[in-house]
Length: 280
Image (cartoon, rainbow, N blue to C red; front, side, top):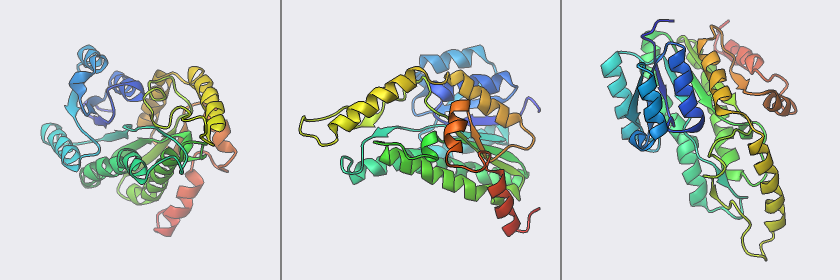
């Protein structure tokens, strides 16, 4: 891989995104690390200072003009985008009765439409180049619907369907599409989650269930994956000559997804859908 290969990472200010920036830079990529406010993340500033191949840029996945402008500047400065890592995302706790339609929409705006905006922005240049990679960080919630995660589940299921359908079409133009499904990860994600993160009034019919679920999830998060280990998987996908559609970032995640998926790599599905397009 040439040093000039250009990667864009969304949601790079902390957690998996931040570690992915460092992992890709260590692998020789020139990384454009994006966030709504990159200057507000001392950790990202430190990574950029440590790696000459890292630059930061403002990109808000909920703002189409921001996404298009950021990608246009990368293309103007570097002439190409070889890799997009869709990592930006938000969590939202609550079951359907507890959440408003507006809360569902806000979650979809970041987790689903944010991926749509970023992917649409890079595809024309990748298609023209006849090459490129798109890696989208989804979640085990994109495979298995978890309790009190209705909006989050819906957004991640939607992203999985989007990328699964895009994969065979993009492959006809030399573009590899993959999704990564982490299990619980030790990041601020759980503490920054929106919605009904704690049981409400004592007469809340969901309170006992939510208390039990929260206790279990806190334990899973404390025992979860290191974000650097997840980033290492993303870097490995990025350098794989024949990447799978679907990856999990740990044995726990693979075992859980295996309860539902016959083929945890997704290759068999893509094989069938590529055939519908006349692609061997």
